[in-house]
Length: 215
Image 1 (cartoon, helix red, strand yellow):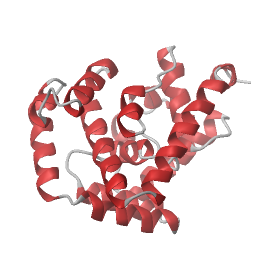
Image 2 (image 1 turned 30 degrees about the vertical axis):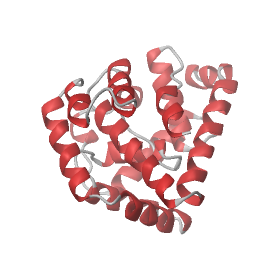
Image 3 (image 1 turned 90 degrees about the vertical axis):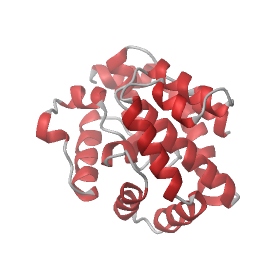
């Protein structure tokens, strides 16, 4: 058994709780009130954008600051790395995105197993997320068929440079499956990624600032 598999088994109860929270989120997105599903997708988008190139505690503080009413979207973006770019991405996204319509698209594609198509839809709809961060947005919405090839996963898998550039959902999802198969962890892709993220950093991240907001 690899060191990663040992980590996963040693923290199995932690990941079971993570899976429970993700299942509850998924139920809201796929089966709950449409407005509630839209709210989850909005928050998952904000969480994903704020996290880009930014330390976890810093982007989570910005996220909480916004949704508790202490920071505007612009101010939250400026609390993170590349804040100027992010505030523009966020503004453009909120100007053109109907979150309830996006929730309908998520429900249609997810319930019919069209996960690659859905990933393309999200990348084309919102601004500032690539295939990797769009995958994170959907995964944090409870769609654990997705994952984010972040810097921790890239380091674990030995990926760099051109290997981290994806031109379509198909190539991205193929690489995700390849990485997941290599972990030896029998879990959905996002849970396997979560374990890699924790293992590489040496601590279990619960992301409760996010789940407390949406659940």
